[in-house]
Length: 210
Image 1 (tube, rainbow, N blue to C red):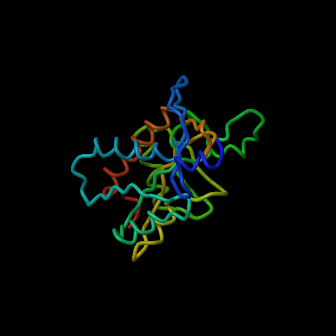
Image 2: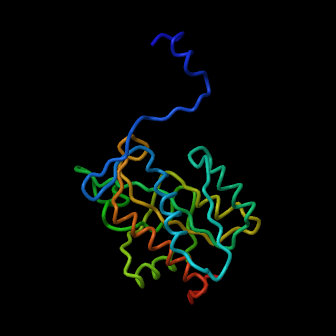
Image 3: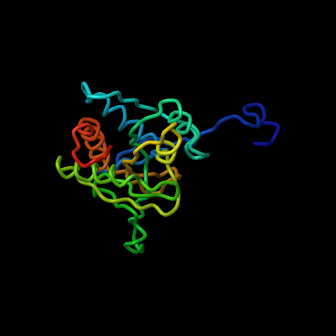
């Protein structure tokens, strides 16, 4: 189209998105914007299963994570949580020709428990609690050390009025920020199971998390 024709439909500043449907490929799902619609799905499914937690639980669907974790900062400051668990995708660079140390995570190996990213070093007590909870519930998991890139975990951890003991559950995803993002159904299910178990057992953890 010519510029004149285009301007009949859009103007500068209009939001646009890519036309791409979700498809299933074997045990995986493939589409645009799995990052971070999959985290929304995981949180909704967890809330459906969560019953009578022993403490107040705030479920927050944040915006503008990619441009400065702006939603998470405001949410953490408003809620002022004692503990926080962020949900986000992480790199699964498990493709041919890649060295083992470059993979970060792999599809089908379970949910990922964040240890650190470029913006956050997760509280060691929360990391240990997540690991023990996953093992206790026989939930497959893999450690995540992400040397570049950050998540809402940083906002949850630092932007409350007293800070928060924070960690993150990460969903291994190939081809992040492309129209062919891919996640494994088992990893998604493991993420739901781990989040639910953590929310149900946090108050009973005997590992000095307070």
